[in-house]
Length: 117
Image 1 (tube, rainbow, N blue to C red):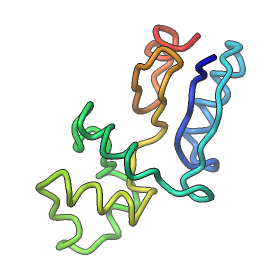
Image 2 (cartoon, rainbow, N blue to C red):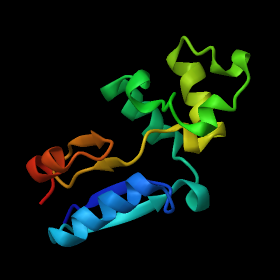
Image 3 (cartoon, one colour):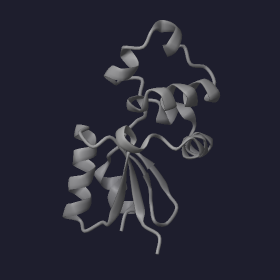
């Protein structure tokens, strides 16, 4: 049976909101922690192809803001993927692969209600 997989970093406030929402609504999930398990490169590339790298790259977070101007100058998917692999905290959170095959980025209670069961 397919399950929902939540990718992210355990101590992130947005992740905590997503976990709490899932628990309140009885949504089963597996958690993949970037800090402990790394970021699966093939998954990251597939997500970029589906959503676009600009959707996944968190340019507002502290990790991205601490990068040098040269590191922040990202104009291609390959550079974005390399940056997100090197700095997993620069990936927007959470990224959810739903049991039905949908891909969600970020925490939005209405979106969660529509796609997570």
